Length: 129
Image 1 (cartoon, helix red, strand yellow):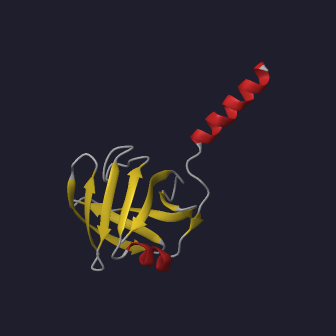
Image 2 (cartoon, rainbow, N blue to C red):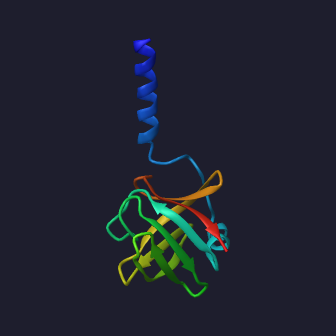
């Protein structure tokens, strides 16, 4: 019994440490069809220095066809920024700060922004009109 419990705990901890689920990377055209004219609603999972908020921040971003965006967070912060595509990567910059680029993966009914070099899950989101 003791061994079985320890094995189950180890498996659970290993699952929590996984950087993200192995999703299917979207192409440039798929990312554009997904975001342009739509609102991304999500949560920051692992913030970078130029991200929209700290870890666990809930947010909404509306992407315009002209490469601009408008965002708001659950903490009451709002602002504007820019977006662009670099290959298959979605690049976003907030409030005049430098842009960060992430590959977008589809995992079940949600999408994930994943770091190129690290493979770290940065944010999870769904799309609405």
